[in-house]
Amino acid sequence: MAETIHPFYKQHRGAMEAAMRQRLDLAETMLRERAGITDMAGIRQEVMDEFDIVLTQMPYVGGEQSRMSDFFMRLMGFMAMSRVLRRHGLPVPLIGEIERQTYKAQLLTLSEAERLAEGYQFMSPENQALLREQAIKSQREDFRQDFVYDFVEPGPGDKFEFGINYKACGFCKFAARHGDNDVLPNICGLDFDAYATRGIRLERTQTLAGGASHCNFRFLRLLPD
Image (cartoon, rainbow, N blue to C red; front, top):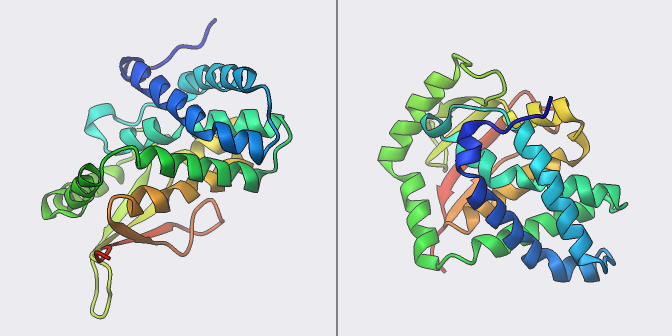
């Protein structure tokens, strides 16, 4: 029986595939120069074929009702890229570096005004209220492969504006289920540029992927240059 894609991801499949093709375009120079890959057409096809597999493996975590669905759709394609590059013998740290530089370049295709507007919205009181609400809902674990997290208020002397402690991670669950644990830290590394390009400083000293009890995300606005 053929594996199927969840209807929610099928609805967004076109946009997700377009994002993957853009990443491969942005990664081409690094793949040629850093990884010695010459058959880019072959690599492109392998990654897109692997992405088809990843799409069937992606767990449903609440769709439009969960903020984490967007994270899955933005980043899960890097699992496909990692698998292919690993099969071609690239060391995991190099894969991570290529993916992080590629993701940063992709984020920077948006104008500074658009990126800063996204950052302002994320840090806004309205979004913080939503995060508090969704953090409480996450404790119910409505979806077994979803994230579970707490909203963290700053205490006396803290310099961050708010934080999130992820006690269970959908990417960790996915990696454990499908044999991707070795490339999992590369996914974690994408977070810093994702926030920095939006004018947000992320401070994090531990991760579930690194064996900690939780990922301690702390957010504050970057000061303008």
